[in-house]
Length: 285
Image (cartoon, rainbow, N blue to C red; front, side, top):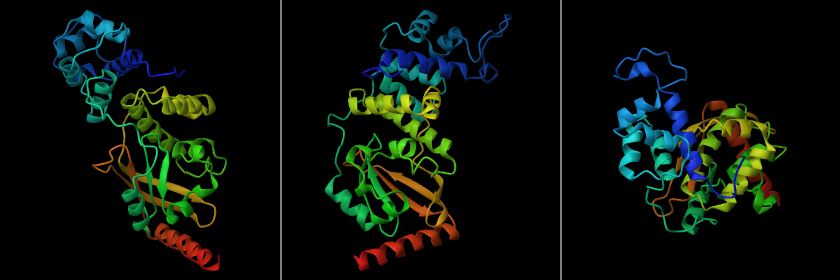
């Protein structure tokens, strides 16, 4: 259940538990202990030993007892738990030990980026913020996904469309994979922008409105992918497979430029047909 704001203490506690429990004791050079293991992964005292902190400290962290670990402790625990870079960043965000951008989250597209999105035609491209709000798009992306101009601004959100829009629920061939990747990004954003009430409300809406989202959110996956592969069922031209790339502008780090490319000859041909339909429509209007 979502709270009005991010409860970093409880989320940090759950995060540490899940990361500790996924580790294989055989991967560590630890003293053998005779007693059988009743829980998966490493014991708390083993994590404490690896990190050079007391067992009681790890216990209190995992119980959510209001501790705020220092940057040094976060670093040693991250190494002990063998966190991947994106997990380490998430841990630092939860512990409030990573420098933050003082600017407010972007709610509109930077004009140079809007022009860039248009210039990327014929490749489908769009600009989003950390919430997956769609801030700008070109005609190719609108033809591939939806005519965003027909949607109220509150519905111009990539995750909302995937979960809630009736035309989009079956649009992705591997829907759970797409939702899982979206959740990983949103969870990382949730920790990085704890005071963004719009983001918290959006996640709460998804949890209550979509069973798949609620189930996958509880898994606490934060493996964010900046590039990947999606397969879509387009109502006009059939199945389209795309490779996507996500870029973060240096001067606007809250905004994300997403670019699609056809993954095979059939998909590139389908994208060409979509573009040709758009050109014919524009000429006839």
